[in-house]
Image 1 (tube, rainbow, N blue to C red):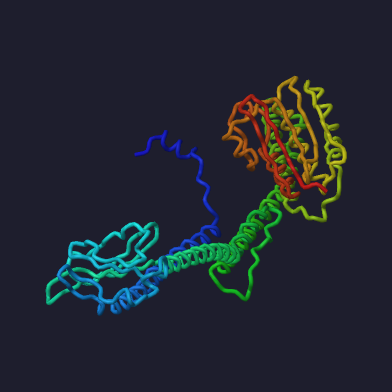
Image 2: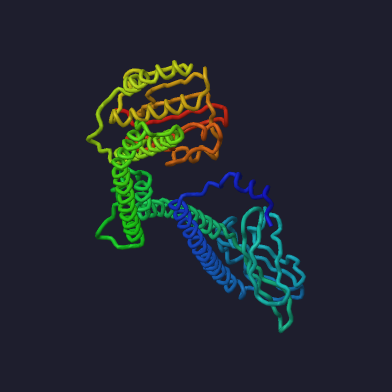
Amino acid sequence: MNSPADLSARRTAPKRRAWSISMRIASWYAVSILILLTGFAGVTYVAFQRSLEGDFDQHLLHELNVLLPLVEFGAEGPEFRRFEAMRTVAYQTDGVFGTYVRLLSPEGDVLYASPNHQGHDPLLLALPATHVESVASKDWQGSPVRSHYHPLFDQGEFVGWLEVAGFEWSLDQELRRLAGTFAIGILVSVLLAMGGGYLLARRSLRPVSQITAVANRLHASELDTRVPRDPDVQDELTHLADTINALLDRIQASFHRERRFSANAAHELVTPLAAMRGEVELALRGSEVSPDLATRLQTVLEDIDRMTAIVRSLLQLSSVERLEASDLAREDVSELVGAHLARFSDRAAVEGREILSDLEPGAFAPVAADKFGRVVDVLLDNALKYSGPGDPITVSVSRKGNRVRLEVADQGIGFGPEEAAHLFDRFYRANSAAVQALPGSGLGLAIALAVVEAHGGVAEAHSAGPDQGALFRAEIPAA
């Protein structure tokens, strides 16, 4: 059974980076071609080698048949008769075109050697164990040589050997050239197979890349994106694309139902809440209301105000999610943020806080000014709400490449890793006493995130931990 330490180590261990599917398919192509061609080349090489050796053996056998009639048997063993008179060039020539002839005793002693043996070390013997004709290959002074041994019999008695040998230089050269040709052919084939397999795999897996791209582009304001497909192609990947598109249809329909429900519910609650507030205020102005009842009515009034704030936040969230491209206009984000900072200056002064700003001029971006202003308000309100007296708050706007960045940093209560994962969730509020002691609905950051995503941007939050302050960042595409 795994211990908690083992499980923790397994979770924190770095993941092995795997090859892409295209590279794995290309590698399998290459390995398969390598195995098949290597096997084919090996079989062909062995067959060709045996064919060449068979041809060479036929040459030696021909020479042997020419020499056998010239062998005679004397008292001292076999010897050649009229051999020197033949004046055959092959027996005089030294090198790859020469034929080397020897008469050997039964024990292997040399009784006669053709003239071209002179100047060479003695040719090593490879006599067969029995008195039968045989062929053997060996090395002679760094070159391959092949010998044909023929047993000699005189009236049924074994009297020696006739050896005919020749250099296998041409055979060896042919085999070397064949091996080199095979090696180059296999290498080129493997490279072509790998390149072709990679291109084929990339082309075949293109719908998967399109599905990934569509999934990365999906967000609340762009649920109508679908995976493109070729209507003339019917295969596993087009079926996958159809399945993904059907799933997106269901998600979009569900999301729209949820959005309509939230908007309609919030809208329907506004009127009764306003009526309830009017009735409670009217009751509070009555002369017959006791102090105890007045206190209770005041509590009800505060609850109505809290519910009204939540409903209005839901309505704002619904309107943000319906943001269209036509609602956007080219704005200087620094000027927009500066205008909202002015609205919070009095509150900051009353609460003993200082707001420091670093607004880069000319940070233009396509924004809906009223909606993006809500992001600034939410971040500033949170910074003031969760900072202590005297803690400075820093607001900055800058352009980073093709993005405009808004950052709000404070030195307040901060948050831990578990809270960071839920800060932008709807109705989420941290369980710490400092957060729960302050009023709030948990919808502010959710609205800010929705606004930023509707502008095609991202929002994130960072903190070193509780009581270590926090940094909230929003980035949107620049104009």
